[in-house]
View 1 (spheres, chains in turn purple, brown):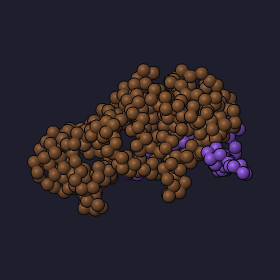
View 2 (cartoon, rainbow over the protein chains, first blue to last red):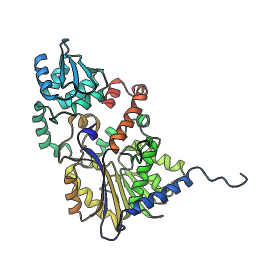
View 3 (cartoon, rainbow over the protein chains, first blue to last red):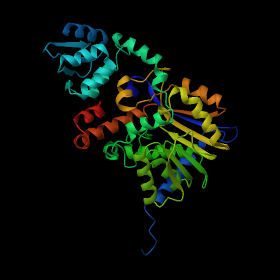
View 4 (cartoon, rainbow over the protein chains, first blue to last red):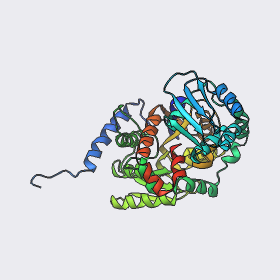
Length: 52
Length: 358
């Protein structure tokens, strides 16, 4: 309730010790998510091999 | 006392529509008559007294004890009205607020032993209780709803994916999860992102669950969970992630926390911190929450967190605010809890179920 009415929120801070570690634009987030999503599919139901 | 109660409540509640019945049977309405009507009743005069003396603590306690009941609508509807008033707090609650604000550092003084006890108070509860309302992976933090139709389970998976993406984890990297909970995020990082994971928690119950899950998934080589304080772990780590843990650190310990993170993080490392925040500046913890749910806990504003990050020599590379995602998460948790409330009563008791409902 406090999130809708009293300005509670959830924050995510990305921290590093030096510049140049994280890419210049935020596009990598979507790219990484797409890559991970594909891996998730592979991790759970084992791919059935032909003839199984 | 009935008249005093009526006067105070009508001064505070100016929006919505609420009918109040006192213990003596006196009935009155407060608010402007807008919205869905809610009816509440005080069962005992003592409950009325407690709410007049210290409303923020008294209401939750009276509800848990069954001395304040909601006869039309739900407790969530009643709270929605109480939290939607022009004044954030009833005027008679303000002295308590000032007192709490002044003493908040004492309440949030969380050295090792106290941290451990505070954690045990909440997280060493029977794991089955949490499985009543959490998703299958036991994610006990804000989910990430990619669409309004996303289910809780999918939104929690999306949250883990979103965090892993921002962490830029590469296979074989050493990753530290501070406050690893029941292990869901750590196992995702080990299994999907190929990390070499160390998860630390102060809850023995959570540690046991996380370790068992790692074994079941055949990840004991790449995911280790330890019962350890963030102040005592040795680095370095390529990546550090901490989800829903800062809330337990305490304002006075933010310098210690971020300095330790900076020491543990390798030169090219990335840290991702995920926590609940408040948008209106420093405050103090609601007394009912502090007593029954999260002793030692506090939800900080960014203005309290960022100075410690700067002093620790860490660079802020990205800030994202998940605004209504937590509201959606809590709504899902509440619905799931209410659907299986009977089981919670079986596990603990009625007072406990009412406490969680509240």
